[in-house]
Length: 176
Ligand code: IMP
Ligand code: MG
Image (cartoon, rainbow, N blue to C red; front, side, top):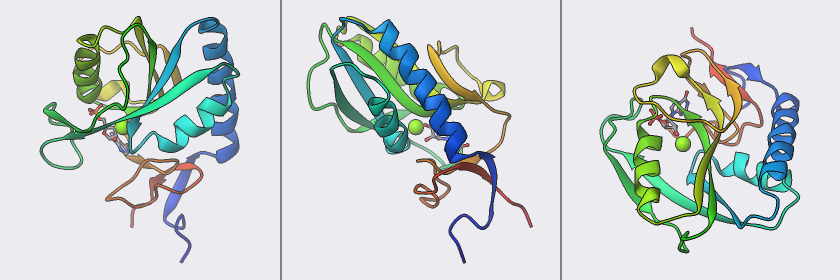
């Protein structure tokens, strides 16, 4: 059976590519002449960040941070641990966090607070997806791909139990 056979498409690969190009163009305009670091949150953002980086025609560096939430798998507990830290300091740098999805916002709240202690020149957030109905803390999203309803989505880096990460589109699990 095909990997994506039990998925209902929500955003096609073409639609995602189009939106990523638009976000890249916007970011390119905003970061002219600035020392930009794209900071990908592992592992969910790895496909998004690789496409987004190629849509920004500016010198930039790429780094990653691994975060994991304590507690059960499907709901963020808000208690976050760093499983893999940045490889370089971000002092005086313009940091753009690249996230796959902001759900409750608790992971982002932790990351924003943590990064602030490292004295970057600025910190902004680009997220491909946002579920505003699930929000539990106020997070400013500077660049947004798509807003979605309270649905669990997979593909394009996002998983359910480590599956579907390499599906080229974003979809929902079909029921039944
Ligand atoms: P938050 O802390 O509740 O905002 O959740 C953040 C993380 O939960 C995201 O970065 C994802 O890794 C994961 N997550 C939240 N919703 C989904 C979803 O619909 N599909 C896959 N992963 C999700
Ligand atoms: Mg994530």
